[in-house]
Image 1 (tube, helix red, strand yellow):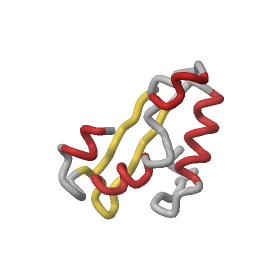
Image 2: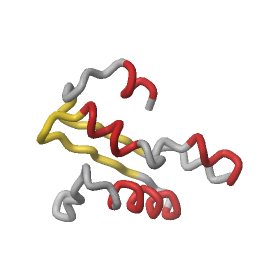
Image 3: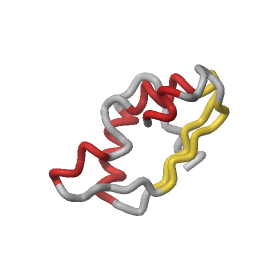
Image 4: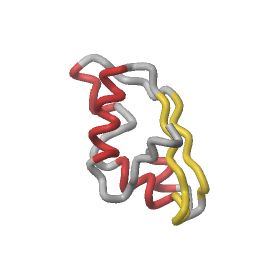
Length: 83
């Protein structure tokens, strides 16, 4: 996330692919997860106006957290057809 915050110019990306991020399943490690409450704003900042965030995970528990975080953000709209 720091790279996206510090190095990528505003609106520079057409797509961001987040493929199988480490779920950090241990409770004490969850702060290391890519998807936190700050993630939608970080992704939105570097995406172009019509940009896409494409996310894949094979961890059902983490998928639920990602859906909660991204789905509750007014910055993104879930495209069920694209899924």
